[in-house]
Length: 322
Image 1 (cartoon, rainbow, N blue to C red):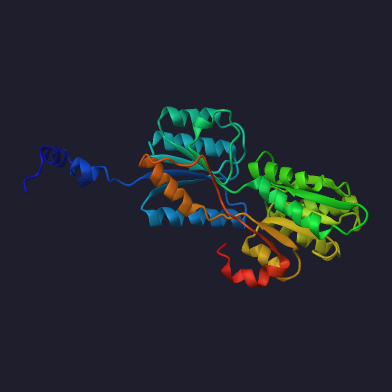
Image 2 (cartoon, rainbow, N blue to C red):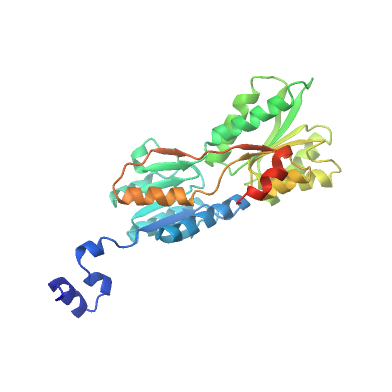
């Protein structure tokens, strides 16, 4: 079979062989996905990154990956770099909810579709992104609240709660607080006496819990509600160093259900963890392929998740993938 005129011209010009292929074959070129990650602040985030990287490889999608180190300005730079590189799809897990409109408009003007993963953005113009996939953070907060209300339904007197919030302005911090408060407000005995950010990290969780214990005294805290497991694990250390027994002297509720939380529950140091699955990679790659193929994609894709009290930890632990 004789080469086509397109192939001869491309080869003569020294272009890559792929450029010399017929248009039908050229249409099969690899999808390029630009992904901006929040950072590596927790076990959850590390598992999320691994899921995305391995799923892209399995799906045959070229992944351009950027770690924002928990800074919004780094994510905005990364998104602008992806636009300049003319990737097929941009996906990112936003550090905070606000301040994205300008860069998202730039992506829209460049006709590059955007997918939000794990965290949402707060914008009036929802046409700036195709879909948001991830957990229902408000529902996670509600699950934590319902578990506490049920556990302490027979307790008389005030239940004093301290709260370790996630990164200020982030969707999970805002929503996990909102969902939890929505449930506990029905009973006036539940009172949040201290609430401060621990930035989703173990070190900050420990530091802030130390301050809570100092401020409230050893007997002034009944419950700790941590917006993620890493902060709870840091707080457990602070509780033990104060001479108290975590999960006994202070009831501890956290969110994520990572392996570290199951280890803490099996050791009798954490009462319950609400699941928030980081394994979004396969779901993301399916959505990316559908978007590029022009197929319809739901505006909101919710991850199905459970809740794990310490009594179930030993049986569930061998099944955990993160």
